[in-house]
Length: 196
Image (cartoon, rainbow, N blue to C red; front, side, top):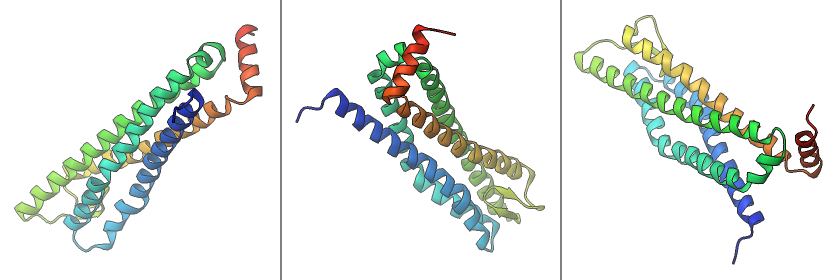
């Protein structure tokens, strides 16, 4: 079966949206569920280990979602070449969306790095026999070693930035999809031809 340009666009849009949903939903679940679930455990090292294990298991799936978002986004940009040139506002929002996606991927990588550092430092403290107190994977307690607490705060911030950027990516995508409506297309082309 031969795919038409319209079918190709629909497939790219579906891959993009599923990838974005996976990225956004998984990070929200991690912040709201995975990180907090460790607080049910008794030992600080176990609180960190459980979260680290869960994030490590989800990481390949999360990167699959990010990759789908980026690659399908490139295809959607290619398909929309004339629209970018002719419809005012389309290219600007598309560029903003691309920047948000790249920033979100960078924030995801930084968050993972922070989690890795927390895990390494926590294991080293445990091996030394130090008492490790934490409220959960990203919230230090009064007795948390200073270096671990610093990385926890960094990771916590990054983990809130990631779903915010992933969500903003989805919002920009919704705007761009709505720009394909006949009325929006006509209005955008007229605004391009008859600037204010």
